[in-house]
Amino acid sequence: MRMSRIGTGAVAVVVLVFIAVVLGWFVLAYNSIVSGQKTVDAAWADVEAQLQRRLDLIPNLVETVKGYAVHEKETLIAVTKARAKMKQMLKGKDVSPKELMQAKVALDGDVSKLFALMERYPELKASQNFLALQDQLEGTENRIAVARQRYNYAVRQYNRSLVVFPNIILAKALGFRPREFFEAEKKADKPREVKF
Image (tube, rainbow, N blue to C red; front, side, top):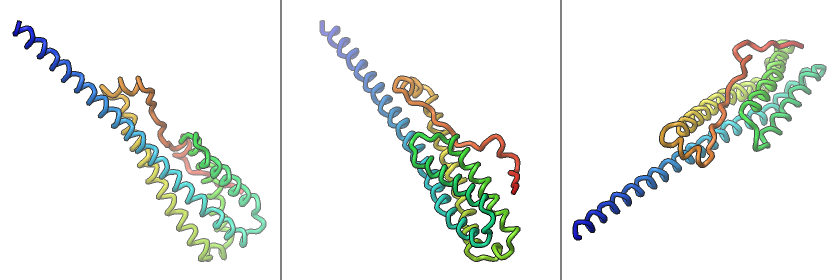
């Protein structure tokens, strides 16, 4: 009789240890997935912040060019419209990286036309305001590239955490979904044509 109590107690201890291990794994896996999700969100916020910084520089650039290139109205209007569209997208919460990349590519094309105007106006080339804004815009482009790399790294880590065993069980059960990468458009490997 005493032996059966010891055997029952041992089974109970084993069951409790098993439950503790499963609960411990659940907590660690859940925290890991949520932490990855928050890292992705923070990295996305960095991308948006750099895109916003770029958008804030563009009106100054347009105003500087406006003084020299009064009859280049179409280019200035196109840049302003593309900037407004992207700014509206940044205010939205459900904008995908793909949609934002498409808006960025459109804005890049219009900004490149703006820089092409510099060749037509030598006095614009010499303007300290224009050169300073151009430098700031180039610096911001580098910041955007770094922010995109960090975002994509965070997405890669997060997405990987969703598919490794045993996290995949928890991820599917709780409805965690992979995130989209912020990828360049398929046409990005070709130089953009600037036409007036």
